[in-house]
Structure formats: structure tokens, C-alpha cells
Amino acid sequence: MIIRKLVCALAAVVLATGAAAAQDPTYAVRAAAPAGLSRAQAQASTLAHLQNLIRINTQNPPGNELATALYFDSVLSRVPGVETHVLRVPTDSTRANFVARLRARNARQKPVLVMGHMDVVGADTSKWETDPFEPTFRDGYLYGRGAIDDKGMLAATLTAFVQLAAQRDRLDRDIIFIGTAGEEGGPPVGVDWVIEHHRALIGDAEFALNEGGRIRVMDGQIRTVNIQTTEKVAYNVVARATGPSGHGSVPLAGNALAALARAITRVHEWRAPVRLIETTRLYFQRLATIEQNPDVKRAMQEISAEGASREQIDRAAAVLSRDPLHNAVLRTGTSLTLLNGGFRTNVIPSEGRATFNVRILPGEDITEVVRMMNQAGGEPSVTFALDGEPAQAPPPSPVSTELFQAMEQSARTMAPGATVLPFMSTGATDGAALRVIGIPTYGILPMPMPIEDELRMHGDNERVPVGALGWATEYLYRVLQRVAS
Image (cartoon, rainbow, N blue to C red; front, side, top):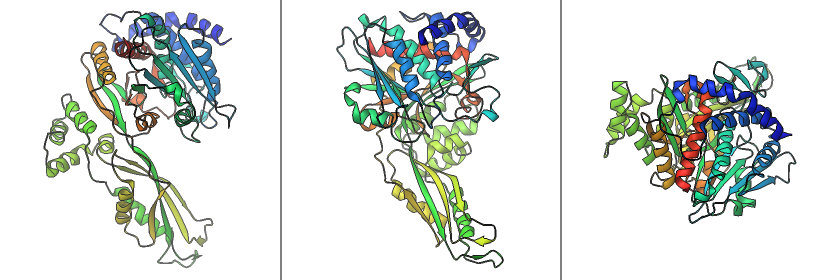
């Protein structure tokens, strides 16, 4: 049934998608197609897969990733040279992970792994202009929950994987494809569970490709290819205020909620010290080559200069921090996300709480960050404490590996005018779990798009440019072919 639906979808969209891709010059690739890749088939197949994946409602919670895992199995179990595994989670009959391994005939090197997550965040249907779980075409876009995060990448990977399977006589590495559960939160039923219970299926992968980076379009051109080499580590820090309780008719100087408000305001306005790592230094150094604003350009050059003094770094950071994204790359971030206090309008409560979502830079000590938050809060009756235990911070992935170089070279072939940047994600991805066990992992969201579309991720009316899907598949195909041939 699934295969028949896929064939019907392919027939229905092949002409429309080919025309859409041809009409948008943003996604036109002047270089010849790589051996073994049909661009028309890649575009149509990726779009058909994505439509089918959007229709599978995998909102987390509850997840329901088993349905997507079975879809992948129905496609890949019939492909010669591919072994498939649907890994059901024993504690929940609706949840599963998926692993497929393309066996190279002449495997002489360690495998390369490519991964994406099958669950999506929830969607408030009252805020969407379309049904989030019914793929809808409008003005050159495909709308649907997961179109960007992360079903677009999964659809492109699936198509590239099938086309590479036809070339397996020329491959010298196995290619492992993993679809994970639970990336968007909840119990650990995804990549961590696979590592714990099915480590052998990952084998001795040399490196991995995952979501996390960005390919950004500006003024109708692909301007930057941001390859994630590391990411911030996420924690929650809870502020707890205590004070006397009483009747609302008698104001109290020690009101816990008032003290909490003062403390969290100070921490909200406080900024952690600036710290650069190899990834962020190189990021600003390369970004400076295309920055148009002369003041920002100068700040990027100054902050990334070899041997820059603390005074130079702080001066440059003051300019760059005006942009929230640059600010988040330069330092640990503390975002107020929850406020709890009081239970009746006429009662002064004895306690109040607030939660900060804290994203620390790789290599930073969360206990020291909490100490600084307590100092910045400056209220004796308010304490900031870590919720949970410190976690192991994964090492950044080096830019010297064959996989990073393949990603860089493929980007320059397909978008010769783009600047390739190593990139640190401010958000968390499944890639961190692979880095912890010693597998260098690189993130990319392979569909090029303007930042205003990128920001719809997790938001209302998520959408992806139709023409970007074929581009994404070709990029993944080139990267995997280059590193595995």
C-alpha cells in the first residue's frame, strides 16, 4: 500500500516539481550532475517521500515514530545490498528507531553514518493556514510540519541512499542510515537508546552526518554553507525565592515574588563572558569576507584575529552582540522560560520559582555559570541551582576530516559563490550523542533557504522551497559519494 501510494505521488508531482525547480534560479546547479544521479528523479522522489512523511503524524509527544520506521523499511528492504532494522522500543509500542546499512562491495574503509530524526514538535492547528499534516503547495513552497525539521532531510537522505545503492560496486565504505525517535524531547528512546542497546548496528563508523547546520539564501543566491562541528550543551537552572506569606491586604517588604522578579531581571540582563573556540573563531573569520556592514565586518576581523587581546575581543563583541544570533555564538546564554508563583490573588505566597534555559559553550563549567548567576541575581532570599547533574560535554569535530572536506568541496561545486563556515549550533541535536562516543559528527540542513523560512522551524506554517529539495538530495549524494568512493 505504501509503495503504491509513493508511485502515485511520484506520477502526480514529477511534472509540477520539475517545473517549479526549473523556474527558480536559486537552486540551479551549473556543474554537471554527479555520476549515477538523475536530477529529475531526485527532485520528484524527494518531494514524494516528503509528502508521505508529513502525512505520518509523529508529533512528540507521543511520537509514533514506528509508522515512519515502517515506511522507511518498506522502501529500503527491497533495495539490493541494503540491510534494514526496525528497532521497536519495548516500553512503548508506538515508538521505534530505524537503521539501514548499504553494504559496499569493496569496503576497505570504516563506514560513514547519516542520521535524521523522525519525530516533530507539536502544531497548533488553529494558528496554521494549512493542515500541518496534509502537505500543501503554495507559491513554490511545500507546507507541513516537519518540512524543514527534520523530514525534509530524511526524504533527501532516503532518495540519495537509494540512488547510491545502485552504485555500490564503486563504494569503498558502507553507508549507515539512522532515523531516530525522541529528538524533540521526552524520554530517552532515540539515539541514546540505540547506542545503549544496539551499538553494533552503528559499528565502527568513522564519522557521521546529521542535521544542525544551515545553507542560507540571501537576495536569491546561496551565500553561506554553515557546517555544524559542535553545539552548546543545554541545562535548566531554577531560581527559588522564599519569604514570609501573608494576606494580600498587608504588603510585606520581604515578598518572595518581588525578590524573584528583581533577581531574574538582573540575570536576564547579565551577560556571560565572551569565549571563542576554534569553530567560532573560524566562523567569524570567514563570515567577515562577505559581511556588508563595515562596522560589523571590522568587528568580525578583530575578534577572529590571531593573538587578539582581551580588550580587542570585548570591543568587537560589543558590536557583534547587537545581533542575537551572534551574541548566542559568543557566550553562554541564559533565557528565562518559566515563571511559577502564587495560588490566590489575595495571598502573598512564601515561595516563587523561575526557570532559565542555559546553553553553555563547549568546555565551560556549568557549576561556575550557576555561581555567576547567583552573584548577578543579588538577592539573599533567591538562590539559583542546577536542575539535574552536569553532563559530559562532547568534543568539537575537527575540520580536517575527509567528511568535512567532502561537505566543503561539494558545496563549492554546487554553489561556487558561497562561503563555507564551520558552525556551532546554539540548539541541541542528536549529533552530540555520537560525538560523546568518539564519532566526529557534522551537521547540515541541506535545503537552502532564506532565514525567514528557516525561522519557521518549530513555528506556525513551516514550509520548504520545493526547488530546494532536489538541491538537498544532490548535495547529500555528492558528499556521501565523495567520501565513500
